[in-house]
Amino acid sequence: MKHFDMKVLLYTGSEKVFTQSGIGEALRHQKKMLKNLNIPFTENPDEAYDVVHLNTVLPDSLWMARKARSKGKKVIYYGHSTMEDFMNSFRGSNLVAPLFKKWLQTCYRQGDMIITPTEYSKELLLGYDLNKPIFSLSNGVDTTFFSKSKKSGDRFRKKFALTNTQKAIISVGHLIDRKGIIDFIALAAKYPEYSFYWFGNTPKSLITSAVQKAINQATSNVHFPGFISPEELHDAYSGCDLFLFMTYEETEGIVLLEALANETPVLVRDIPIYKKWLPDKEVVYKARTQSEFEDVIPLILEEKLPSLTANGRQEALRLDIKKVSLDLAILYNKLLDV
Image (cartoon, rainbow, N blue to C red; front, side, top):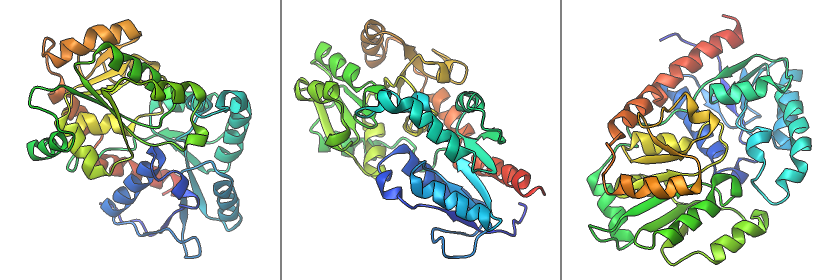
């Protein structure tokens, strides 16, 4: 493997705001990639560095980008956010979405290179007139850690007092409209015989009134355990019967990759990002409308449809962190003009 004579600053700044989110997980993945490439890195901006990774669009990251550029350092801006996935998220998000797009343009234009997780999000950002090189590179998934385990699955089922025959459906994400939580809760009401679990946490001040109302009126078979550790999440993937991802918009979806790696049956909403990448009835099952979800769920749970979990695992292996890190090395070559 090529030796890079450089040091990377993984700028965390206000990372604590995003620790319990996909951006926080992406940052942890970048650490694993750098270790795999034997590239030294620091999280201390006062230390010497050659390249800085920026993962948020908070004001301190923009300040860090400008500071780095003034010192002649290279800036990689990770394009995790788009106006499209900001909409229908937090309280007031749609109102400020056009302003948010302008802010994204300001931030991303500070990068010498923009890395975004998928070809879909790359196409979106190409429409932002950034005039910067944009590359798609998956956030990757740790397929060694997220690997199906009966022991882990048993731990999940014991923790939530599930019988051997009880069907458990899980989803993971912020408690926001865009993730499909209202639809998730409505489905649970249709299927009282199944247990539904939504893992994730969002400050109440940011939750829309529609989501809060849905949560307050949720049937007794819907559970909200909050944010859980990667180990507990591994248990949940291993012990559940279905990972239900009803999101309306994503730039990738790390939790989806984790479920695929864990050989968990997956049902996703049929949205543009997954159209070519994850073929319906080949890697995952898809549904578009609420009635389609209602129809497909029992077919998967009662095993009346072929299992796709082996194919899902193969797709996850293609995006394993070790493989993705090699593609990151290629991007470093471009960045440093080697």
